[in-house]
Image (cartoon, rainbow, N blue to C red):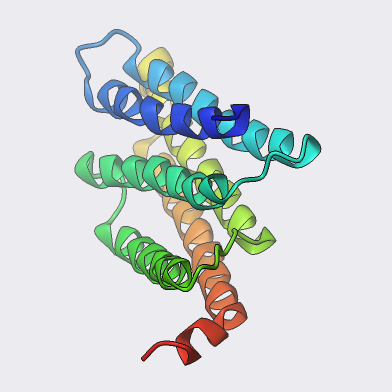
Length: 189
């Protein structure tokens, strides 16, 4: 297994640690630890792709596993935020719908011997989701470190705006992806 694929697997392995830190208040500075793990996991996404392209190590496994690892990381974070009552389940449902639709296209194309890699719009979507997650975790860290110096309503507005911006990018990238791969639907019987 090459280095980019190992980094992709590392991102998946880090998810339970991220979730444990985020949801366990009994761990001192749990949100800081969650942020650290999340940033490390997010950086593996940046480095695995860059390294794979630079050293021509792009594999079919990487084309499939890399976006899957992104989905696992991001959806885990959003599920935690719903559990923590930080965000509504509606944006999560929209994100899940898009991810299942795109993944189903990938699976159908795989049965036809084709591997459909993520496009630039999928990468923009992932970055917007990562930014939203980082903003939300930062908004958890500030009161943890400094107390309630900022009214909670401000954090709520910032979190909501960040999530919905990522949802817009998620929907747009999904539509672009599905339109770009419409030929896969035509071959379905």
